[in-house]
Length: 323
Image 1 (cartoon, rainbow, N blue to C red):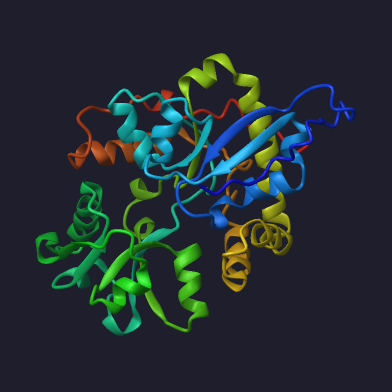
Image 2 (image 1 turned 120 degrees about the vertical axis):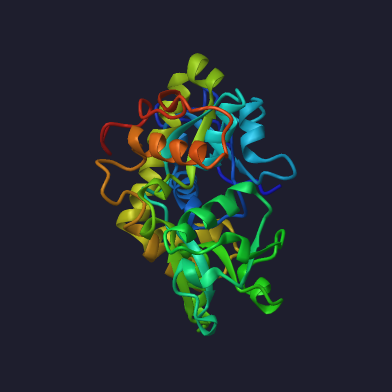
């Protein structure tokens, strides 16, 4: 597991003599570190967590996923997704989204330019490389229907952990990516791609991905810890918004295995996407949760309708950067 962050000198800004221990909390990433996570690393590097009396340990999910770790109380916070939280809550798993890391869905179906896949109609007769979730076929079906195309004409292949570029080399025609990371990498590799963004075909697919999550027990028993955590994290993402170059340097220093050129380019691209048109970083809207849950239910991906009001909350976000 990758452990990072948190100064361990057991001091707070209010108590420089170290008489009060920092509160230890863990946040589990959804995947390997990337620019979706920059605000967390900035908050650690800049001492924002320490200022709030927190010693934050950032770890990789391992075999147990981030959602499972936070739902079971083995971690206080996790990087998650609206779609997985929606599915979890229908199964009475008590996980709650507390902040949207990015305001709008920046994902879509990518293909090498030479494949000439420029719309959902072009998916017919092609191979799609995915991870084997029913959601994938439902999304493909939903946007293909808008062009009178048939999802049954798509060969869906489980490519596991293979990345986009490896999959393309192995004969896969298109895959689902985040443009802010893999799309930027394609630019840097001078490998032109075509993108079919989900949000171009359905407002209901403009959901929050990724998000920060906690569990209901934390909300009930430790609300102040959540407020402190989000205050620090908000400052971290605000720095990434205002100064993506500095934020990129921090992430590169914390995770030296990353490609510095990719991190810097991705960070600049994402800077305007974190908060986008929201009143503040992290804020979530009920209609976004309702719309996507309705889409999932209508497409047979949920056994029941979601009580969206309990799936997310804005109550722990700072009112402003200064608060």
